[in-house]
Image (cartoon, rainbow, N blue to C red):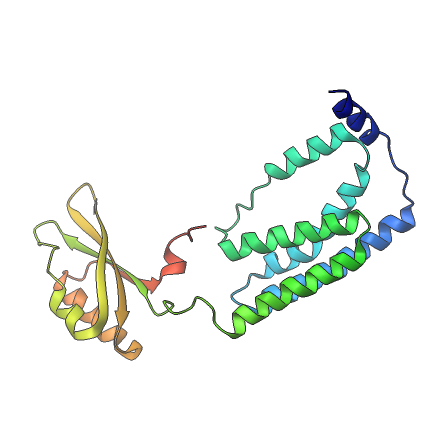
Length: 229
C-alpha cells in the first residue's frame, strides 16, 4: 500500500515542459497524422471528413496528454472522457475504428517525447495496411451480395425463388425472414453470389415479376449491415 501511495504522489508532481517542446511534439503528431490519413485514403473506401479527422486527432491527443502530464487525477478524468467519445455521424467499420486507435496511439507516443518510436510505428503499421491492400487479404468473399425481397403473405417463401437462384447464382442461402407492413408481407434476406454481374438487372426483373413488383434490394454486404468486430 505504501508503494502504491508513493507512486501516486510521485505521479502527481507536475513535470515542466516548454511551449516550444509542446508545439514540436504537436507538429510531429500532425505530420504523422497526415501519413495515417493518406494511408487510410489509399487502402480502401474513405470518407472526406474522417480523413481530415485522422490528421487532427493525433494532435489533440498529444496536446491533452501534455496538458495533464504529471497530474494523476486529471489523467484519470481524461481517460474517462476518451472512453465516452462516440463517432456517431456514420456507422463505423472495423477498419475505421482501427485507424482511430492508430491515430490516438501515435498522439500518445508523441506526447511522451518518443518521436523516433512514433515514426517507426507509423511507418510499420502503414506498410502493413498497404501490404494487406495490395495482396487483397481477406477479400475472397467480396462478390457475395445481400438480397432483400418483399413478398405478400400468401406466397410460400421457402422455395419461391429456387429456380431463379439456380439460373443466375453460384450460391444462395436464406439468412432471415421477418414480417413487415403490419404482418401483411414478408421480407426475406438472402446471401447470393451471381454467376455474371452483368445479369443482375435481369435477375432482379424476374424477381419483381415473381413478387408482384414489391421492394427488392440488392447490394454489398458491408453496405447493408454493420461489420462484426
